[in-house]
Image 1 (cartoon, rainbow, N blue to C red):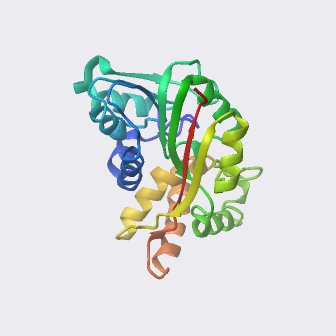
Image 2: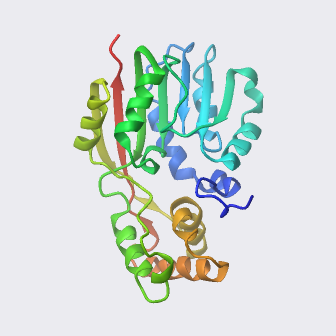
Length: 265
């Protein structure tokens, strides 16, 4: 299977190498966890397992189940997490079709929820997976996340060179603000809900780094609409040339949505 064969697949080797910003944000999320050290925790959207390993280090007597839609990501995660033995289990799973009920003390997720377009159903599934008194601590894109880049990309997709590939295409993300996310968590039955949106501007250093990052981290789904590699290269090249003229150049206007809540005991 190639990285362009399925909407759910990623170039996991590139993601593992390039996802430094996501890992740095995720470490801050992990630092907020109310852990004893013996919990069973769901890592919802584990990716290549870089943060799963950090989570396992904080659970010396605990266990983690990591789930992801991408088989490529899970293969990379299995390689990365071999030293943790049977304290970690990995499975291909859709966040909108979770098979778990009363299974976890807590749920952690970073950089995943914005890829799920139905947050009401998402949070209901997550609540069902938690034991009474269980908690969720998560972060994803939110608010005006990548607003400048997204506007530029939408204009490019509507241009004569690319419009035929993007007819009917919708952005693959949902970026809620803090109030919308809090309402959705409460509708799902969470209490003690706290949400906030914070800026996380990310500076890349040069054109090739920017091109590789936006291609593999941000615009994977966009590029699947362009049928040939030449067209995909031209699409990313155009975005990179625009970014080179920004002040400062190659700055990504990331914003992160923090989410926290509990299930009634």
